[in-house]
Image 1 (cartoon, helix red, strand yellow):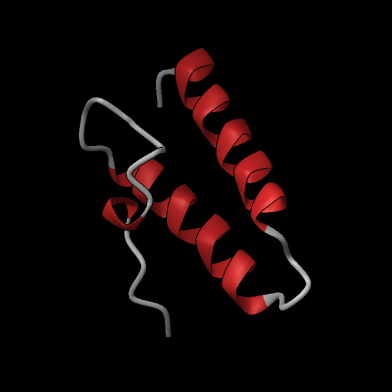
Image 2 (image 1 turned 90 degrees about the vertical axis):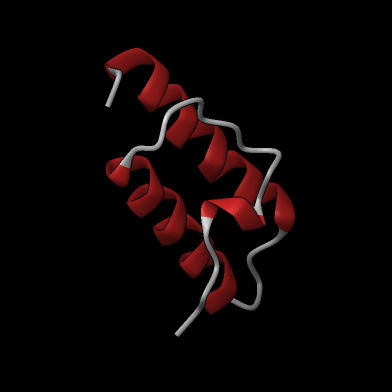
Length: 59
């Protein structure tokens, strides 16, 4: 199991601590690490969508 956390990806900034965001980011990183063909650009796209949802929905 991966030990990746939000702190492992400092370029994805969320001002407040948020368990939902941590879970979504962990899931995206886990998928990235699990899929050998998954590139950094795909991970960046997933993170962008997560952060966009956070901003729009204020999770």
